Image 1: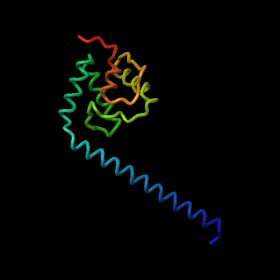
Image 2: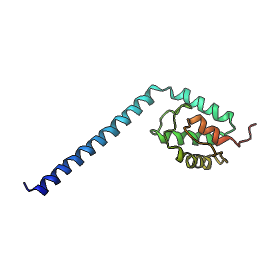
Image 3: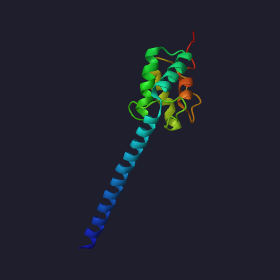
Image 4: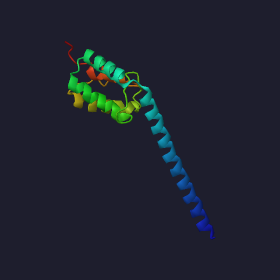
Length: 132
């Protein structure tokens, strides 16, 4: 085999190997999320989420939309816990809160956003909501 072809064959094998590892890693992560979702009490977590948002003045329609918004970040239908890490970079937090604010028709507070959990996100989102 010619030297140029040997190099091309080696690179091709490496690319296939890296691709296979990537697919396997994604599969493992998805299975882990599915297992975590199955272990959670979805009804209790949802009730807790609704109560927390209601205390902060969010209307029911906004609460349901916000809950779906968080579910889509993990796996569709994933039970959301108020103590879950958001899993997004700090520099992306203001944009995420603005998206959620549009969804909920709110004016969020996006001044100090770092290392948030779901409950922190909701607090920032509802800071300016008038509670009854």
